[in-house]
Image (cartoon, rainbow, N blue to C red):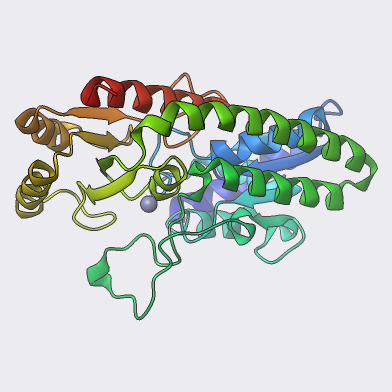
Length: 310
Ligand SMILES: [Zn+2]
């Protein structure tokens, strides 16, 4: 973090020397992920300028903060985060370095999008290091349920309306339009996934509980022995035995994990590895929040069709 701090002084000096361009329209919103950025663009349209920090093809738990992040956060009117400790490894030092009173946690320009959504895997009892280290406040990959996407869009609409009351009608209208398009898309996705209800699959990391629950699939196990812990030979052997016993053939992997272990498992079982997009920008086809699901649902439905013959 010393490097980050050293960069900060120089960057903020450079930033203040630049005249604020009159063309930079409306509220300056910074989001930690591309999913939040896409939802903010849906609601804000040309009334906001949105910058996403992490790319959709990066593991959102582990992001290298770039000097440009500090500048973006320094100039933000609003910072929107996934929360539930998803960004705990990289965001707090960035907020400290950025020296912007508006976007401090708890402040008016800070929105934790997890506060109004449905959270799965909330732990009960004491958390220990032995449980792995990444999901102590429930599963933070909650944006992978379109129902939660709608709830996030609603929270963003209310925050934008609060910070920029003059454009409230625009935000309301854009939310209503997004809600309508998302509902129509959900109807189509539900029809595509209906034949595979209850099918068991395996995923690499615990990124998909909201997605799988929403679309009726059952996650049987994980390639990671514990969240954030790389595959171990003993866990892999147990996983293969259980998949074999239950006839499970599909492993879903995020683009930022090594395919070697999932590939060797499915080779032994005559199964298939699917790289799905966990975020907007995770694959080039996932250009916005609705396209993210469009890509994932098309791929998983066609693969299950091939594997099950249904
Ligand atoms: Zn995770």
